[in-house]
Image (tube, rainbow, N blue to C red; front, side, top):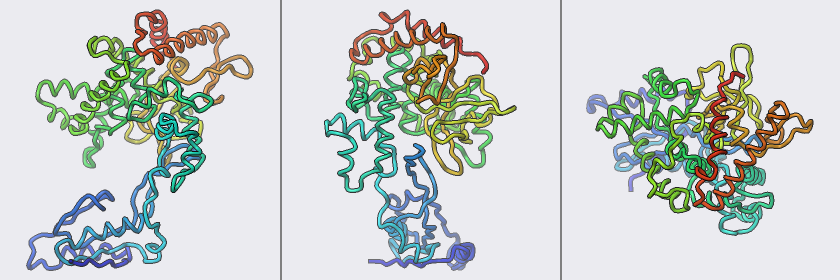
Length: 469
């Protein structure tokens, strides 16, 4: 068996090392290949003629901050097992050398293995399945794990499931929760799919859910960043929405595919054809799943579930229903807008977002897909929404302590209006909730017929949202 050697190396000599590798044996070799690889290459890629490996000892790893309820993507030291795998990329068919750009004392202090995923990710999907399997109290069951998660992370997951209506106050599954258990996606994405089917906005919900569950199809070439950003903004138009940009891009892809020019379309608009094809396949799978639980009747045809698929206000309301409680307040600060969330206060919009260059927004709130900490705390994939979308499709409406408005998210969001307006909104929301509860309990119930008046009132109210804040 061929051997490979590990050398703990001073990182300041990296330039000299590369120079040596490039210039050595030039008499016998016309060129030398250099492979730049991510940590994925540790175990999934083998190139026989690799002789040297340079290991920096770090990787960007996702972790979960339970206190601030956000995902963190920060550089961290790898484990000893990962370092061993990296060393193993060299010397497959001849002796090799691994240069480690960190002292041996750091290697000795590394964890033996990477932290398990249960300690690094949000737990709401896992908690939902624990309840569906009737395994008892979530916290008690997870405490028996070999490496139990932080109790605060478990509590955060339970609170989120209660907020979206998947669990009741006794931590038992609601009818909505039972439906969400059958959808193999994050509960928020599952709720978006159900709401899209209920409110005849299915195609947009399928497309956005597929992208959120899989991957964003937009690519960002290093040498064409400005052109790629401009292409994405052109899809968004005036909507101030990454999700609408995604939706328009996918619709364009399907049109191009029918004409046999999908490759050219993707190349011109900086889109990944592989990702878009995967999204197309996932959409079909979602339709099958929704059909299995009775929310979609395929015999009625697609048009029966897409009356509002081109109504951007309705699409944004469905986004709100699915992404809540991921809500950001937009507050004017001179000629610019500052953004605030309940958990961490001020945040920034991710540079890749179409909203990154927007200074003033027409509507007072954003909903977002993910909050992540890297160099700062960013929100990814955001959409500008109105008060009405939040009041009708967000969380429970709680009367304010002063009796002069409505509160949401434990008082973080406050809505003030004349008492007559507040009363009308509460009554409309009450009627809407009754329809939704009946639809969830009886999937065959046709909300577009028996609830036509309520849905029409909701749509009309959403269309009146274009008021500057």
